[in-house]
Amino acid sequence: VDGMVSMTVAVEATGGDATGVLETEWWFRIESRDDAPTVSVDVFDDTLIVDAVVARAGASTDVVAAEAASTTGPAFAKGAWSVEDEADFVSVAVEVAGDVALFLSVEEGCRRDACGALHFGNGTRSGRSFSFAASPSDAMKALDALRVVAVADDCWRARDDAAADKARAGALTVSVEDAGGQRATRTVQISARPPRPGALSVAASGGVVDVAEDGRALISGVSVAGGLGTVDGCGDNEVVTVQISARSGRVGSVGNFVGVVVDRVGSALRLRGPRKAVQGVLDSSLPSVATS
Figure 1 (cartoon, helix red, strand yellow):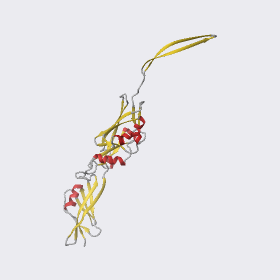
Figure 2 (cartoon, helix red, strand yellow):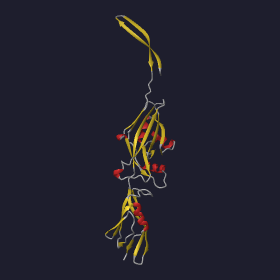
Figure 3 (tube, helix red, strand yellow):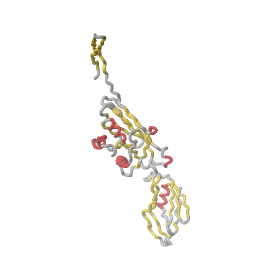
Figure 4 (cartoon, one colour):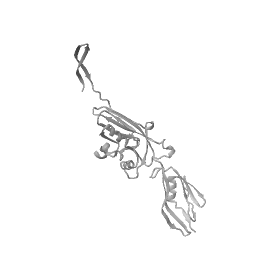
């Protein structure tokens, strides 16, 4: 209680057989003190590193983010967050934004009694922002269970040694407010690294489409996937080498194409050039195999 409070003080003095008592009234000013909440987090180099995942063709980024969050671990180590306040409950707001699509999620691992509102109260499992009310200790547990997911389009790729150079920036902001309206904010910088290149693969869906009179079998449907990009327009200029060989027989040559180097390695045919140009060779100039 704020204000002035009176207190009666009695002073007793004794000397020999005599005793004297003095009573006086003292006034004290009492002023309650409500400290503002504090929020802190222990992050190496003050930056959270996030490896981006690739959105599949036709899938929404929200769905991809939710799926990724369910299979990845929390972004922060247990006990990384610290929330302190004298109040029984605080309001916590969490928001993420950046140069890449970033999403937040609280998955299993955060007990229902600690952050049930995130699981059941408002149906929020992932998104760019959410808020909840909890005790300071439970708020820390909820923040420790946070998962941060970056979703990239398939064109944003980099080799392992260039991942750091092509990282995109973001920020995670956590605000804690008590009943008195006092607020504390902590911002964590995010460095979202591009997805790693997919493994290269070669498919021949068409197989043998014709056998000429001279015994040469024409093959079709040969395609290259993976690498820097797996959809149209991504990784077109990536240089790839495709080598076609036959278990028996000799692979015939193909026509001349600008930008594609064609040579032989034994009886195999080797094509080297930009992915788009090499794919053009495979699509329009059917290699043949001498079967006799």
